[in-house]
Image (cartoon, rainbow over all chains, first blue to last red; front, side):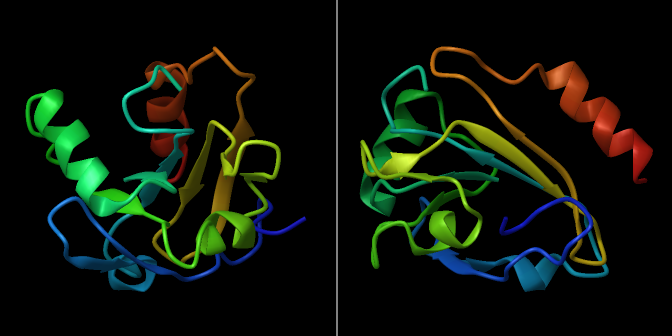
Length: 45
Length: 87
């Protein structure tokens, strides 16, 4: 299974709500990261 | 950080509707769902992520992974407790 507990998290670069690029790797050595995956905007999911 | 396959423009509108969300809301829009697929959390039936939470520690290692059934939500207290474990 990808991204299972104990394994390296796949790096990514995605665009945030302000149009800026954010990469997982920019937090390395700095912060723990919580990734909260949501189904769709404007829904309860 | 939040993640979905909506566009960043949709995220901006949703952020504004919620009162200006201050944490990053990330768009995995194009190529569609590539990051979510890399994490094994893409639902092919609706083309969207499964509701789920992953915690990555400072070393870049996955320390927590949980999927939530449709209509259920993570308990923030549980997530904070997981973060306390890896301070």
